[in-house]
Length: 238
Ligand code: ADP
Ligand code: MG
Image (cartoon, rainbow, N blue to C red; front, top):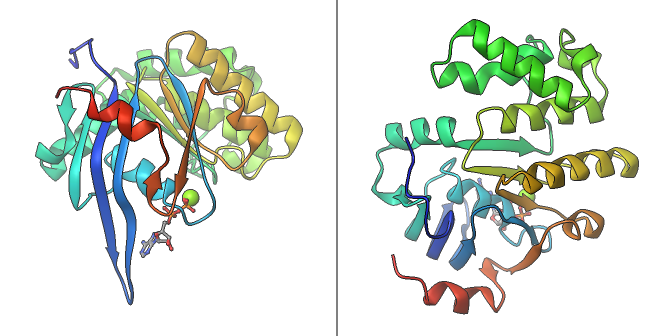
């Protein structure tokens, strides 16, 4: 499937995004970012600096207006909408602040969705979902619906869902924003443990305690990423 196994896993160059609402907002003003395979990086910056927009554009959730995003050797700007959607569901995992689990499905059913979307068989998908829940200490919650779980448990289920199909990148946008500090630690340790097994993770956070667990932090300000990131990116051949 995806197989250039060399070069950065994420490369963004001069990425631009403008929102055309009542007022025009230049949310991304020429972003350069390089993420190595297996890295866990934290993107920090004040509210409104463009972190969510950046994650959405890098991960193919949203389209952008200029520049280039290359994920694992694939140029997102050269893909059709349909190809980008398919690529995203196969090769990316997402964790959001609001958990975003499907309310009518059990924990196990939520976790197996990415596998089913990849075309895996139902029995195999269920087995792998239960294994993943077990790894995250949630075997006893497999048949619970989200409203029968605590916030921390819901987010662990969301992390399980993000990881189950071994995505190229897990994108996490303020994943601990709705959690108290004890549960925040559980989630961050979980992400760090998955990173130690080679999972690439790009994390947006306000929380210094969370950012500190990442190997590297980049700071956004007003739609730009601060030095030295742009200098690193300029040197990479595409
Ligand atoms: P952050 O995640 O760092 O708080 P965002 O990426 O959400 O920042 O927002 C960056 C800028 O873009 C802000 O000025 C915000 O108001 C604006 N923005 C975000 N989403 C939209 C949208 N859908 N339409 C118009 N403006 C938006
Ligand atoms: Mg945000």
